[in-house]
Amino acid sequence: MFKKFKAFAFKGNVIDMAVGVVVGGAFGKIVTSLVNDLITPFISLLTGGANFSELFVILNKANAPAGTDFDAIKTIADAKALGLATLNWGNFVQTVIDFFIIAISIFLFVTLIQKGRDKLEAKKKAEEAAKEAEKAAEPPKPTTEELLAEIRDLLKENK
Image 1 (cartoon, rainbow, N blue to C red):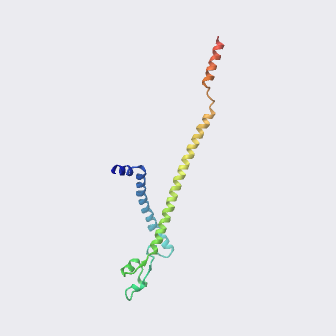
Image 2: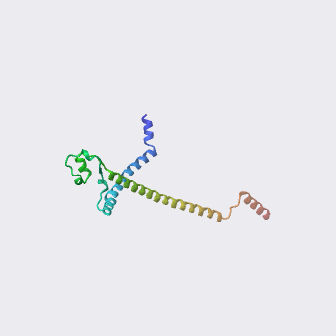
Image 3: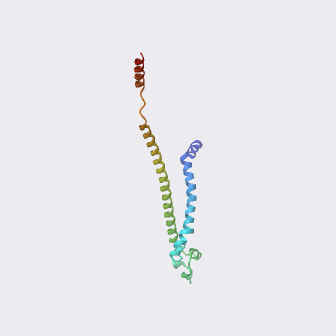
């Protein structure tokens, strides 16, 4: 059992996948920071200070304590402190934005890698074509039979 597990765990594909997960996690942190620290404040500026992650709807106002001023509840934490159930749709919007930024980033990264591979492949093909052209430009070397026939003819002339 241990041998089978060891064979599975140390295959190249599993290790590559583990590295991908670690790098993906780090990349996710970068994208989260990009969204939270750069994009969301910019969108907030455009929308007059709205913070997506704090957009919510109180689901059941009837369960609120008597005399609750609903206009004073500005954050999810305020609503939770009063024991109110909330639909936090702003978090969903934020997560969707994160997803699209990650998807675009990965698309651009893969496209960049593919362009690099295409250039390398085109360079290799050009080098191979140049070698083939060089071989074609060289006069063909005589075969063994032709060389032997030439030697025979030279020997006949010298007699």
